[in-house]
Length: 115
Length: 117
Image 1 (cartoon, rainbow over the protein chains, first blue to last red):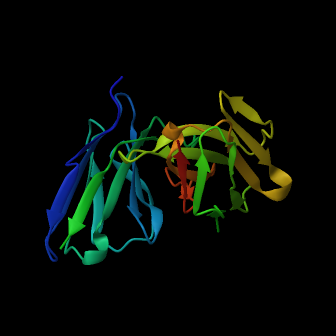
Image 2: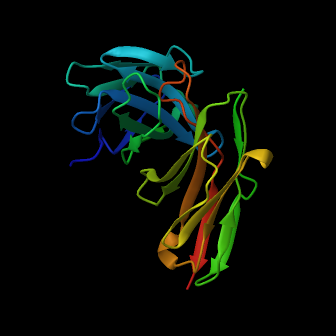
Image 3: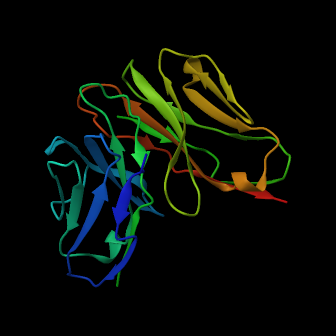
């Protein structure tokens, strides 16, 4: 069973640019969650999607957005990049239907560097 | 509000020593899940264990064991006879089972474990 696939693995952007990250969940999983990991703030929840609907959102500015497609693949977008957006962005997939049991399977992440 | 505290930022041991990673949590919910994840240098979070709030049985899996004590809101993780391959960052996490918490794990700050040969 293939795991969670995130692309790209590494990328470098400059301030003011925008970036789109992609996540393909485990086959059959319908929920995708996104997390940001930085040395200062640790792992912080960004948002969760299920069947193309955002069900939950963390405390991030509107520059951070996401979407989910009918095949459960998800993308997150960060516009007007700031230096502080440099982080490892992790995606997790789950079967998570109506029950919230937290069995999340994580990808290897996309490491974003903003210069 | 939920909070997870891992008091140890870094631990360094010599191979074959036992090591315990502490985790203390705060939540107002009565139904919740606790997790431990391992993050090797490659970056992905590897699931180690999940425990729900109604199951206080300790668990052992090979060299790993977990001690869940609801009375002290702790969920500690012990590695017996540590090995160099155990070197990683370990995260404790909390998830409330309520319907508004989909996908939202609250993580501790992590403990960097280094096992020296």
